[in-house]
Amino acid sequence: MIEFRDVTKRFDDGTTAVDGLDLVVEAGTITVFVGPSGCGKTTSLRMVNRMIDPTSGTVLVDGRDVLGVDPPKLRRGIGYVIQQAGLFPHRTVLDNVATVPLLSGWDKRKARARAAELLELVGLPAEFGKRYPVQLSGGQQQRVGVARALAADPPVLLMDEPFSAVDPVVREGLQDELLRLQAELDKTIVFVTHDIDEAVRIGEKVAVFREGGVLAQYAPPAELLTHPADDFVANFVGKDRGYRGLSFVESDGVEVAPPPTSGWQVVVDEANRPRGWRAPDGVEVSGGSLYRLGDPVRGALDAALSSPSGLGVVVDADGALAGVVTAHQVVEAIERGRRG
Image (cartoon, rainbow, N blue to C red):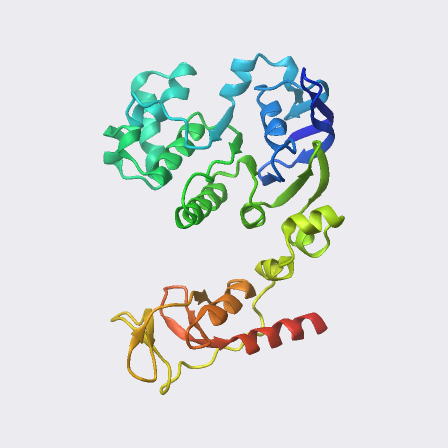
């Protein structure tokens, strides 16, 4: 557990970066700090591993005041991931990941074996261990950065806008990977981002900071979207927060119809997986997202609205065609759910 007790940080120029922060990050959860530039979210993160010390107040990790722990010792027990990975360019991927275990006194063979295990854990082939960072894509470098942060098996992981420098498709894949790893490893993670979509997608709780380093609201994503604490939070979350909130609404009641046999028709491959549409004039077109049965209702509405036919394509757990939905059916299901 990480606890901030009335924590304030003022810099020498008089700037107040964090002002009276009271917040508890529960053990084994992902907590996201989000807010505009200059709101104190990164400063708050860096006070956990003493890259910055508070001016007043107390930061505790597992009940211990961080100011009472030698900084190098403290940091060896806390993983840290930053933008663009921060890898050593002159070291191979394997040696980059093995850095922290070696600094912790592990012998080289054990450290490199641990590094190889972690590369597999984050989804990188073993042969990547022989490469240098410049030979990897941005997304691959970020995976190495995560592996390095996990190398000494720290209970706490700090992530400072780790995915902001990659394109949206890679970013979503990295978010999925983080959620998969957390389900397996159960770390206490503090994640900083300026992107509210990223915050509500990965956070179990989200802390919204306003300018001046003041905590505006700290709540689970669904509560943040449906009950913003004030106008600042409402504006920051965005006018489409109602649509985002559908990510937390169950899809019970959404009626899936058989795929059409005339007009617009779904084109499938040999394994019955959708690969596009055949228009009424016979031309094959792409477009539209897929909705997986059982996912939140937002996915069903998005599939229907993004489809060139107006029909959302529904797939089962194996990705095979299960049917179609219309936006009207989805909205009706949402309304039925609200009426109870």
